[in-house]
Length: 149
Image (cartoon, rainbow, N blue to C red; front, side, top):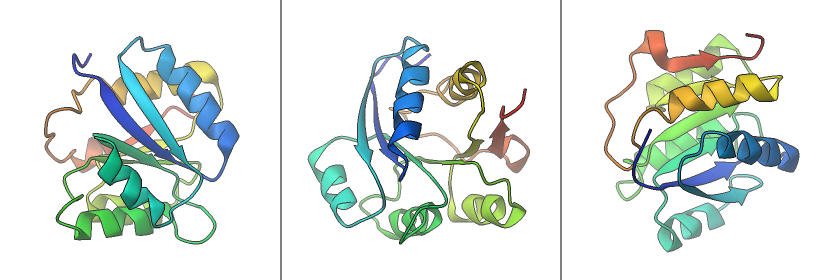
């Protein structure tokens, strides 16, 4: 488990998903702080400037700009490109997974249907210390799918 506090930005148009995510994350007993944004808008960059975010979770499918577009914009910006991005979605479409990997996401977490499974998926993500730079995840380990485990 990481020693440093994880500072998380969670981007998802479904507030209930944020609440469930936060509850599951609290079960890991790791130090963290979390900010919520309901979708990708310009103020996300303001949040990144005002807070020391060291990991971003974003839904893939959102109204307006998608999580994939957010990932693309972050990785194209020298100021934000080193912030790890975890895609967090119900989508298991090969195109979404491949595009996320190609653009430099660290993991693609499929939203779990049970609280216990979500905790286990997050445990896998947070076994890494996100306060330190992390190498790219090999494609065979990229998708974390505990949706029905």
